[in-house]
Image 1 (cartoon, one colour):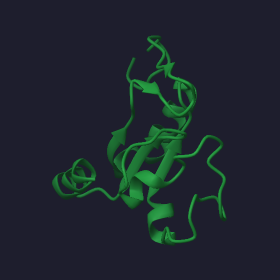
Image 2: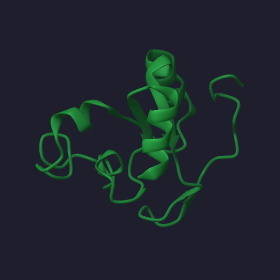
Image 3: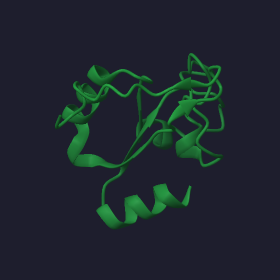
Image 4: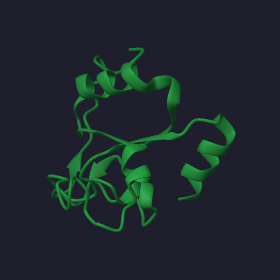
Length: 106
């Protein structure tokens, strides 16, 4: 939660990019798409997540460098931070890919 707040404050940017299906804490920005499949109520896990939070939280797929590139190319000048964990515990302890060839800037 504090990392997101600091990143937004320091960069002046309003978007948060996170990997779907991961648990990143109880901040509203980090609750979006925290369940595997990330559907929930109207594309969110809780009706309590405000529309503004849903709009300002971008989701990329775990271990999908092409999707990450697409999201960053489309929104990079507004992204304050990228929240990712090195493995998805919720998904059965799936490790992140070491292949960075399709990452932005690679």
